[in-house]
Amino acid sequence: MVDHKAVRAILQTQLDELLARAQEIDGALCTPGSRDWEENAIESEDDEVLTSLSDTTRGEIAEVQLAIHLIDTGRYGKCTICHKAILPERLAAIPYANRCIDCA
Ligand SMILES: [Zn+2]
Image 1 (cartoon, helix red, strand yellow):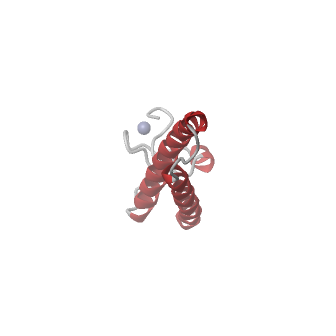
Image 2 (cartoon, helix red, strand yellow):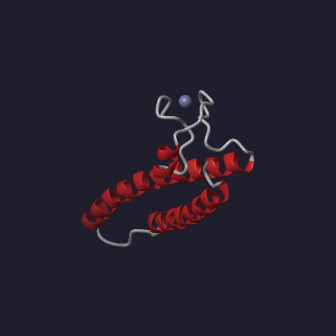
Image 3 (cartoon, protein in one colour):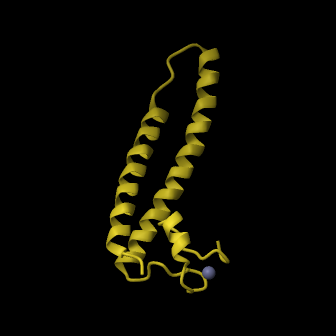
C-alpha cells in the first residue's frame, strides 16, 4: 500500500523545485542580448537549449500537478488509460507516473 501523504509531500517538493527551475529558465530567456552579432549567434543557440529544457520542465510540472490532483481526488496509483493499478515498483521509481507500463 502506497503512503499517499508521503508521496504527495515528495511531489509537492518536486513541483516547487520545477517551478523554481522554470522561472530561472524564463529569466535567462528574457535577458536581452546586448553583445555583437557573433556572440548573439552563440546566445541564440543557448536559447534553443534553454527552450527545450523549459519545455521538458513544463511537461514535468504538468505531470507532477496531475499526480497531486489524482492523490487529492483519490485516483492516484491507477492508470489513467486502462484504470488498472500501477505497479508499486513503478510508482517508487516515478512517483508522478499516471500510466501503467502497458499504456506508458
Ligand atoms: Zn494502463
